[in-house]
Image 1 (cartoon, rainbow, N blue to C red):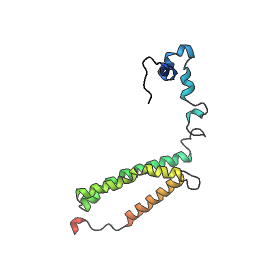
Image 2: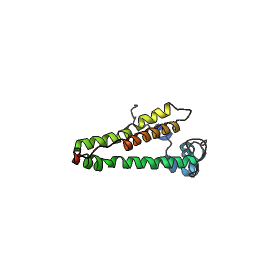
Image 3: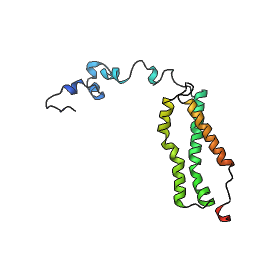
Image 4: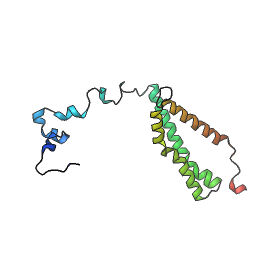
Amino acid sequence: MAAFVKGDNQDLEERVSYIHSAAHDVEAGKDGEYADIKTPGDIEDGALAEGGALDLCSREALALFCQYAAIGVIYGLIPTLSYPIFTIYLYLEGYQTASYGTLVTLGWSFKVVFGMLSDCFPIFGYRRKSWILIGWTITLICLAVMAFYPFGEPYCNR
């Protein structure tokens, strides 16, 4: 890093910032140089990708809404099973129910890894759609196994 030399104001004059442009509005027009630098002109309506805004009633948007609603139900329902099933019904110890809570939320910790995996290895040309379908298929299989697997007798009947 270069040392600051006392009396060297060249760095301050070359920088373009909002405060600098606001101070010189009279000289440079309404927004000054800042308006030209802050937003690229080739992006349509501020979007990060081409294609314009997504219609909120389209199939793609409704599919995303349904997915986020289903994720909310699963992440809200599965951790709450700890008390009625594992603590009351099976009479597990506190450390065992705590490990259940850790295992349930462990998948959330790997979301960055799976995000990079889906970005780096698209399936059939889709970066996210194929991976979302694979994830929901695995979730459906795991929930079906949990639902149809015999649960066993409660601890109080043993």
